[in-house]
Length: 75
Image (cartoon, rainbow, N blue to C red; front, side, top):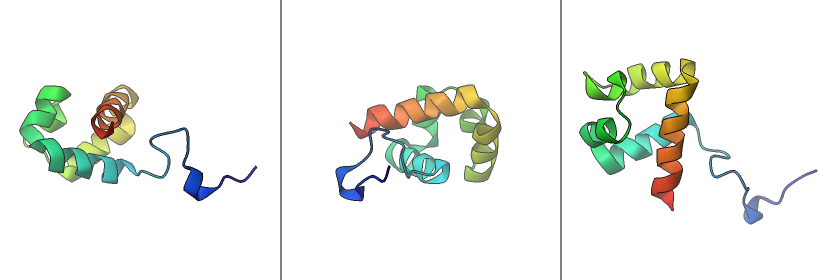
């Protein structure tokens, strides 16, 4: 089945990379507020894009929380 790109996808994360998602959240909230919203050490202590991406890629539960915040924030 091929999907029509203009119709969109039922998955709100379709086509969104983890890096793009995290960059959007940091631009919207900043690291400090992001750490309040999703209290994980990579956001709370010396946050950086690289360390956060590395952590989120290998920690499914944390990635799920960040993705949920992104979806809720985009609505």
